[in-house]
Amino acid sequence: MDELTRQINSVDPATSLRAVGALRRLAEHVEAVSVARAREQGWSWEQIGDALGMSRQSVHAKYRGTT
Image (cartoon, rainbow, N blue to C red; front, side, top):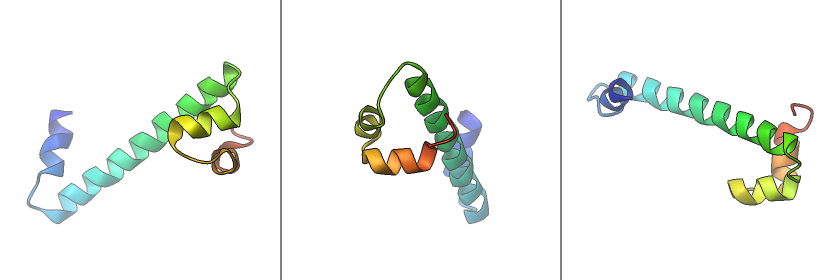
């Protein structure tokens, strides 16, 4: 995490932009795993959408068939 923080704060735009990309990929991965776990525990698409600040339709469209 310290390395990522250093990269984010870099004066080199290429370094900080790569760090932003890494954070986005990490966030997407954590979201997908969390959605799958919620579905396994019986959560509805509406509950998941509420937790993510998304509509039921949006989260369902994004993750249907992956859980």
